[in-house]
Image 1: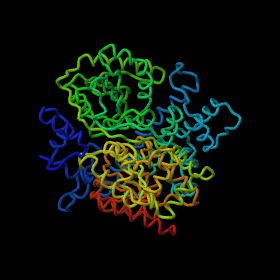
Image 2: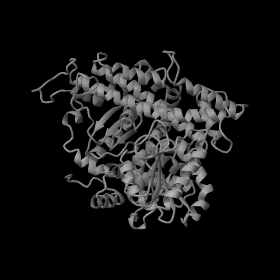
Image 3: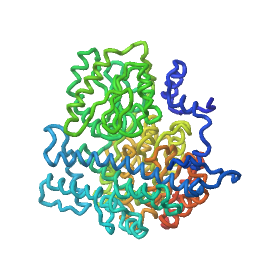
Length: 638
């Protein structure tokens, strides 16, 4: 029996208690059955990369100190970690490749009319110009075609002296030159990932520092892939701007056909958002008086939340509870962070689980293969499937917690600059710099990452966030961190009035007034899905360029209170590589090697300016992050 709450989300707690009573298998039940979890794996000392093994190293020194091949604990831990970095980079970069393929098909005229299009021409021109593409007096489609061709080079360039173009366009020149001088920039994403994996093969790299540098090289490919995924998505689907919506399970409507959009890649969800409006009448004819109600889960939920105001029902660890309400008619999934267990939960209800990517199938789900050319047709079939499932609903099984919060979301880098321009049209960044210099804003903290069963869901996001806000730190959030803040009502004007320190509050009030709001901006700025962490780098780079400093000089920190996936490992690593102090709220699987711990928490400070800061206690974590901000302020003389 686990003697802790497991979740601090009131709606999720209500549903998990019901699941226990009804004997429904959930992530928390499976976590309990896994106890005690493997001690060797928990500290990174289990090696499974060849079939002589698995091999384990005794952390106490009494048993084996090397694997059969002779790899010691430092090699094993570093090798395992580097592989996680490569896998994370693969996931985000493949996401970006999907978006790139869709944009190419559009500019080549291969998509049906009235499907995908360039929704943000202004952003297209800005991005193209930033990347050195001529834009003046040119047709939009010609510029788009050049951008597509240049982006494909980040997946194919073989010139070892030339780094990835998207990464170069996203960071200050000082940071790029530092990374280049350390030979940490691969010529292309695919090469960087492949080389990271190759060096971790049996009988290759055994030096822990060299392995970690190879992993960092792969993680920077992750940043490149994330950057192009976000920017191209904005061009295709629109750049988010502030919008008011709601979050938590209470957004599910018992009188509607409820369709959950779960995963990360907006190709599918954008089609469903577009097509569902045309099928509202059909849903009402089937008896759903409120028509079709789209809801978001995980990062696809964040994508449609920020672009369309679709309410967010759950972040990662709560995804099963959406089905358990008994009022969900279809859960449509694409890629990443989708629990295979959702189909076993759905067996207890009428819910149809629909997979949409050929490389991401789940046993027990209906599969609808979606590609850009056929996405809108397939989206219509999926909505029809949900309407059909609605007719099989069991009213006695409906249990929707009366829990939801209003939230203001949609803070892309562009929308933040737009708000700042209301204060100073000639120099939009100056108000932020003035606030940081005066101390009204002490620094900026980005909350990124996941949910994990190792920590009570959402608690540390909220605790650390409130504490830093009290100390006048501006809060940004993405991914499941964004979901945690949204579900708890921390993305509201009321939260600003309640939790922000006096300096931060005065700035957010002034910006809210300038934006024409009846009150301040929200306490936490939701920037998007986990792939959208690059938006925060956009903001930091703009500030660094304005001050003519490197990213490692800024009073900017990152926090992953519930890091869990390989993607999170990769994100955290590139965050450190770009120069940011980066907090982990749960103990990473590296403590079996004191050398690896030393490299990542101390060695990278000198090498890259950034470092990992591991602290499970939220109060201490907030204090350490604030101290890191103060060190940077002192170095800047403010």
